Image (cartoon, rainbow, N blue to C red; front, top):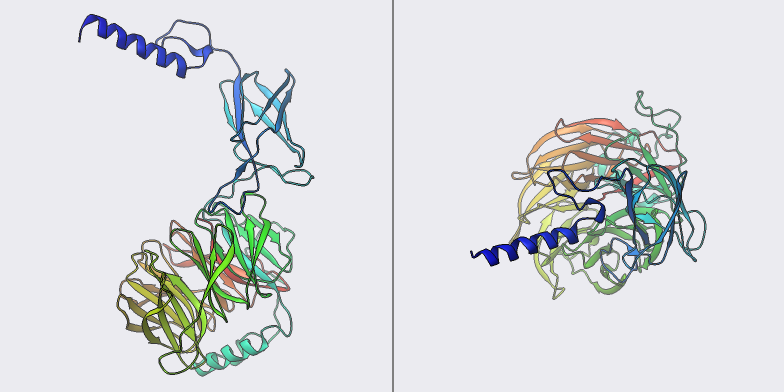
Amino acid sequence: MSKNNFLKVITLVILIAGMLTPAYAQIWPFGGGQKQPSGGSLFGIVIGPSGLNTPGARYSPVEGAAVEAKGQHGTFNTVSDAQGGFKFMQIPEGEYTITISKPGYGPFIKQVKVNKADLVNMDHISLIPGGGISAPGEVIPPDTAYVAFAVIKDDANSSMTSQWKKGAIKMGADPYSLEGNSPLDNSTPSNPYEHDTNITSYDNSLMTINPSDPAKLNYVKLDGTPTFLCFNIAGTKLYVADTTNLVMIYDVLHNNMNIGNIRLGSAATDMTLSPDGKWLFIANADGVTVVDTINHVPVNTIEMPQMSNGQFGFPMALTCSPDGMKIYVALSTADSGEVVAIDAYTKQPVGRAMVGSCPTGIAISPDGSKLYVADHNSADVAVLSANPLSLLTRTSVGVSPARLAVSPDGAKVYVSCKGTGTVAILSGPSGSNIGTVNVGKEPIGIAVTGDGSRIYVANSADGTVSIIDAKAGFEIKRTKAQPKSRPCGVAVKP
């Protein structure tokens, strides 16, 4: 390199370094230059409820919000930019009251402390439309469990309860231990070592369980009666099925606010998301309703074909292949069951496999090669080959298996067994039964965390949630019994 070119390169490097380095820090890295100031910096992003027109959107930035930092050394002011961002560079160290406001939103107020050379991050600050104090933008971490609790009504689901009882008793369950034959005792916690802080709960609610501290519970009040849950692909919205033929949409980033409803012709029995997050599939009496997650409106209903034995099965559970090409639906009657594969594009059946009676749960392996079906009245799990769709084996698990969850690596399958109050553990590759965990009374909903370390189980008859350590294979905690409400659906935030 010539001397002139070498000097040009050195000059360019110095200019770029000057642009990227704050004015106060334009010093040589090995000493010299001006003295570093003693303050710190504070920055953040102001957000509002995300619009329903953006699938998977994490937030909608709030531009032009007034941001004030008031402390013993004075008051500093700025406004949020087009991305909702704001910053205070090198303000004196000390305690500050941060106030953020904009017409049409409730103000946000929080105390923060800035130390020397601190970079205080306040992402994401949620402003609530319509007035009132905006709560601090608490980030709900991945693997937070959401459990749907529904109020207990004496006459609710009487016919459905009767049907599953008959099947359970037929398979050997003690009829006097089943739901409705003896009064529930919610006077004391199920776990004698329980030490949760008492938190206000509601008859119809979502319980949230913090992944790092299972004793930290919160409740979100619901207007409807929830059953099953499903997150969107980004983990920012939660779909909550309701007994009144609705699927309610909750914004997880903004204080779990209800931001809309999807109306169905009948109550949902299960929900799943397409792998790309563009479609929400909802099983109900009309078939499978397909919802566009951009506008959150139903765009199609896939009618279910007649079963191979001539019966008309009720779509009780569904899942989607990892490539998004097929939807697998478990069709159920009291004495038979069949899984039908539906082409996601043509909406036509492309495969069938008879399973045990009254299937109520279905799950697919992460690689899409196997399906697992909980045969409620046959007390087993049917293991199917997904391509071509065919029965491989059936494994006995316990009375009235209800729902299933597969570990992220596909090594294990967890099955809630309603009639025996247990969770059966199956080998994912072989489908064989390799263990059992005792949980609460009549477990239904079950979900695995994204890291595979924990399993959450909704115990419907005693109002509790069991937390299982996946590695150890035993229940490490059971929440306090929630009176007047029974848990059903469980979902874990991505």
